[in-house]
Image 1 (cartoon, rainbow, N blue to C red):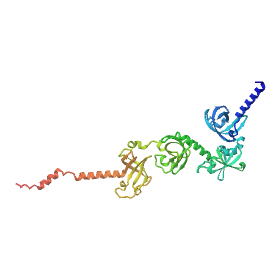
Image 2 (image 1 turned 45 degrees about the horizontal axis):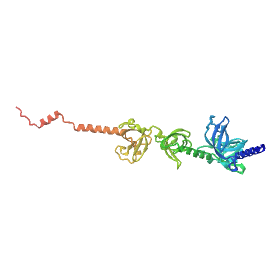
Image 3 (image 1 turned 90 degrees about the horizontal axis):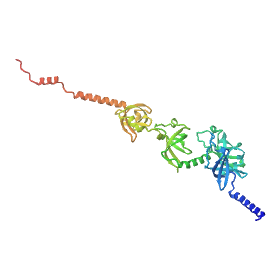
Image 4 (image 1 turned 90 degrees about the vertical axis):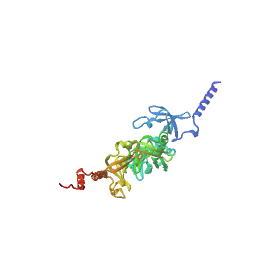
Amino acid sequence: MDNQESENVIEEKTFAEMMAETPPEKDRLRPGQKVQAVIVKIAPEWIFIDLGGKSEGHVDRKEFLDEEGNLTVKEGDTMNVYFLSSRNNEKLFTSKIGRGEAAKAFLEDAWRSGIPVEGKMTKEVKGGAEVLLAGNVRVFCPFSQTGLSRGENVADHVGQTMLFKIVEYAEGGRNIIVSHREIMKEERAKAKEELKETLQEGMVVPGKVMSLHKFGAFVDIGGVQGLLPLSEVSWKRDEDIKGLLAVGDTISVSILKLDWEKDKITLSLKATLPDPWASIEQNFPQGTCLKGRVSSLTNFGAFVTLEAGVEGLIHISKLGKGKRIKHAEEILAKGQEVEVCIEAIDSEKKRLSLSLAADEAEAQEEKVDDFQKYLEEAKPTTLGSLGEALKAKLPSKPKR
């Protein structure tokens, strides 16, 4: 083989290699295209990723630092990234479209590809909020798409930076509508899939109170929200949840029920607290008299709270001092402090049978009076009286 043939072979191989390195048109990445990649190396400024098929790229390391400057990923992690550009055969990716000149060129692609866009709420406007994208692009976020609950105000979130989805892109970018709610939905869906593998009924998990309602509270337990019913907040019977919890409180809750199909999670704070009925017989022995407060009145009696979670019933038949009444409110008032005596305990059913201490004392006095009267009536006649009675019946002896 002469030199000319060798050069031709080399040229052919080089061209073949170049063709092999050039992906077909259908496989070429488009700006804004979402791909899955594996982190192969973490450098001081860049994170290098493997896209598969001998394709590599890099992402700015700063995108994966938390507020304290700690790196949130490690080599071997799989992530979703978005293609930005290719320069000198180096592919640049991002985990989100953020601020900067590069972002402006990709807002339309972000809309078409569904790429998260970083923006800042700048002010409250009619119907929602004004958001600043890519440093200087002003867009509109309707209140329904802010992800805020009815009790929250847009004004309280002005100045905050968060992720948005571009849900409408019109008039060449002059009319853009964004949504933070869509981001939250995606995050919840992702968190839900992850939590499906770990959460189980009966587990105690940390949570954050997100909103309060008459019927209970919604608590975030790591990306999904569960309902904490009012009856499961405390052992104490309380009609106002605001006296027990506040939005933003961090609490530990037990998972009572998981229904992933209906997206219903039922939680309990009460289940994580000591059960006062576990030691009821030691703390409230039968026959004990103590003070309590009337918690509710019914036509069959009055409920009296002795301590948080411990409640007993004074049956209506034990009210009125023998007088027939139709409702307990004829004798007692809600909130009234009374002294009661414990007549019977059913720890299994968590029931206490009570009576009013005053009635009990009066009944005891009546018993004592009755007993004294019985003793008086049954008291034997004295010997002197008996002798006198016999003497009266004996015939008199004649005097001598």
